[in-house]
Length: 186
Image (cartoon, rainbow, N blue to C red; front, side, top):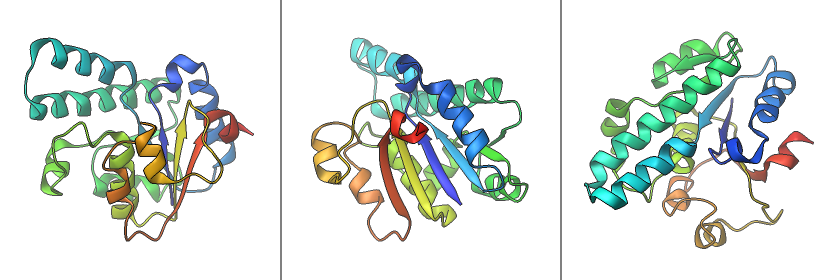
């Protein structure tokens, strides 16, 4: 199983559709779970929270909704892909060898003890999902250039991955690839 997180910023880069096409054509017959970033929807949450100064729990819930909106967008662009909210739904859908789009369930995340914080974004959630599913590989597709010999802590400092990402990938057995969308497409 491969978990592929598509950064929300890919919408602005013009590469979002191409990444979805790549998943559809190159990963057929393999179990793929797509984790959508929050994109413009999450950016709005950040902006509104900054203006209105509401708590991180509310912002977290809104950011999960942003990921769910992106999941719906992906489904609208790729009707053959399936949406699943929970681990059990993903496991059921993955047996059909279709691409599955994760639309995260807040109750499941709360039960797993995922904190409500901007330190945890869809990057860390993708790592948590990959670990929980026992994935073989986690691919984070970004709209920024990534050094081939990347260091996760350096990527945290550069704000390419979230602050908690390095904690979520500790003690995992899956391969991690963090790549620019253009490299994903080649």
